[in-house]
Image (cartoon, rainbow, N blue to C red; front, side, top):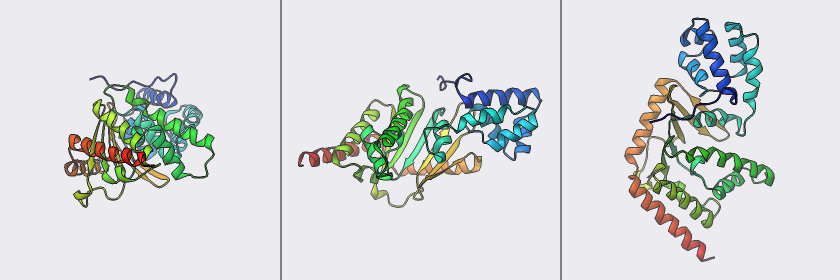
Amino acid sequence: MPGPKKLDPASSPRALLGAELRHRREAASMSQEDLGTPLFVSGSFIGQLEAGTRRMQEDQARRLDEVLGADGFFVRNCTALKKSKYPDHFAEAAEAEAMAETIKEFSPLLIPGLLQSESYARAIFLGYRPTTPEEKVNELVEARLERAGLLTHPTIPTIWTVLDEAVLRRRVGGPEVMREALTHLMRLMRQRRVIVQVLPFCAGGHSAMGGPLKLMTFPDAPPLAYLDGLGSGQLLDDPAQVLSYELTYDLLVASALSPDASLALIESVAEDYAYEDQQF
């Protein structure tokens, strides 16, 4: 199976920095672990910088310039990485998402961004920021739909999502918006582009009651876990932590409805919204 499209160093700041980092590290006859030591990071983190799945920070760029004798190359080019369409707490995760081979996600309250319809995304942003000017809301919606562009590839990344039943029942934007959102989700499921399972209310307590979880794997870098909070986010690469969250996700899958049963439930809820919408 072919891997995700490789980033072009000529057009991507992260790819440029990663390629140059690997070149200079190898020229210095250093392993990833050797280079990680003076930066107080793991060798796997250096590998993620080289692969472009992690964003280089300015303090890291400054130290790399010193250790590798790069004459300010990394600091100068690191500034380009600050430009992002996404909030600071999510920018690095969004960049990694675009390079992922697999994305597994548990969402307790919302349809995940990659699977949202335009009207649902707009209702979400208005809920977050009810006083935001229309122009800004349009920019946020456009960025979210642009993220979903990776679904245009027929198979990569593999996307496997577990939704709490509350996601289906919460009336974001009203019946019409919810019907459209669930119809969009069903279309992706029927096209076999995504795997979706619903964790029903009757499942009771479960392994991820603390909040959302996203797991990402890559063809040439270690896996990552992303924990999302209110205006905050944490991208984790520690192998033991990622392994623990992988077990959390596996337990969710074991408690969730099958994909076929989930599709039937989503269709039933969508029909309820359609009927409700017709009454008004």
